[in-house]
Length: 197
Image (tube, rainbow, N blue to C red):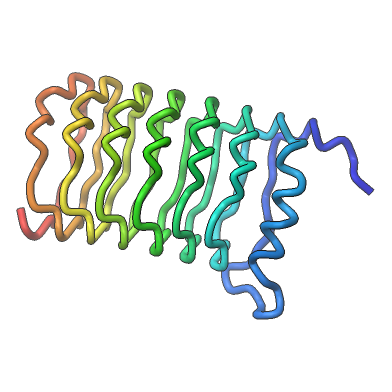
């Protein structure tokens, strides 16, 4: 029996980091898709350690009040839906240890409220979309241990709110961005152990 889901503000989805083979990830996502359309007050969505999760349903874009989306340790996650651009209230996006994630959708540039973007140990991430320069509220991008990342888009120079840039242990990063001097709000720039530099 369903209660009033329209008032839900937090969801913790209890999917184990090492789920049993009989408990298929697609089935779990099907259940989540069913309720997304109704939970328009949801502010916090925790999907950490969903190791079988390969993608999110496009209906996630209907979560207009969502402020925090946690997808840490989703090792099979390959992509984010373009509908993520509809998450106008999203402030924190955590994608740490998403080792199958190769790219971010260009639509991520529409997240005008996004302040913190965590992509630590996304070992297959090769580049960031140029649209990332449109994230006018972004303060803290974390890109530590992104071992396939070779360069940053010059559009990052447009991030007027950027305070902290973390690039530690990006072992394939070939050059430091020349636009660093344009980041008037930048306080801390970390690029330790970038071997090629």
